[in-house]
Length: 263
Length: 268
Image (cartoon, rainbow over all chains, first blue to last red; front, side):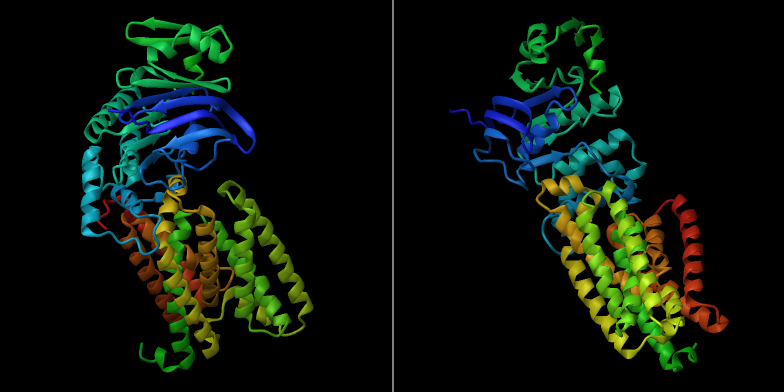
């Protein structure tokens, strides 16, 4: 059976207007892969995700998603943005917030059918958020909120999930729980997941490959191939040591621990 | 109570007040979740210049007010694309319009009492013609709002996600602020431009404090809005104090009560 590339990039340059952030990206991602995307701030992780969503066009090269150019508003892609505006939701419940995203691009009154309501309940069960779905969203903990946001991106069960920094602001225990949940969902739905993060360690067990952005370039491959002293040194143009300690990776730059700078 | 409604001007006041209250309750809810409370306040004051200009050119104040408020709404959308920038854009447009209003009043040598009518409202002086205009404005706004309410609600809660789903935040935002300009024009007939905020944002703020769902919030907001206006008009009738005072005072009291209520568990 021929392997189908769900995402394919040929010599793609990413950026806004004519400012190139990362160039010469060539990669192909198969259905069902779990890709961790790493790199320092401004290296192109979010830009890559926004390009896949069709919100910005690649500056150069060919990018394909489902064998077509990325288009705005593709409902086969689930997206979990990094920046959130939550101050205004007042006392609205998670159920209401998830309900708001159903058919949201269609005009009309936000009235949900019985079928749509049970669909929301199913998604809430999938992310294990049913027990707090009717509490005001603002009263939820960081980990609970991330599960609600994940539920929102799962609406319609899209084959691709693009998750931008879902672990940001979570403590190690909540990160672990979120990743375990994500992995269970991925196994159940056979989704392709692209997830940006700063620290590779909590993801080592679940990632199939890593995509690393640094210094205007990107490299993709197995974690142990990419996260090596030689590769990261070449990507950053600095001397970088990757130290294996027990089951963890520690990335050290000249006189500094780069993973500390990853915030 | 029967006495109140035996006067034509009281009937007009109740009809105009109810129409303004319905629209303000709904628009206010969206204005709050979209962080547009300041814009609502500003559009009210901008209407002052429109009404003063209308007097100068011999038009009905409400017409001038409506036209300038809608123009300003466009201006605010075009100048302030992002939330962070929009407060500045609103402030600049607001102060320019207040300046214009001052100039118009200076050039208008008519009855100076007109200024206080615009500023503090004159619900008892609403004419048949005003009522008709208010009715059509309300109807058009409600139809337009129900048409865009789904993408509007979603893009208010999740602007980033809405954009990724193919909703243009700019178009929806522009559409909404124009409807808000209409709601401001109606509300200012009841409480005057100075106190537009109390009717447009007050009832919705109370509703948001004590509801957990979209529809319950919407319904509570409209009911509180109508309740406050009716009670305000009635109290004004019996005490002879200004309607604007009663409406703003009732809003304040209800808001305090809702703060207390929201601490307990919400059911709706």
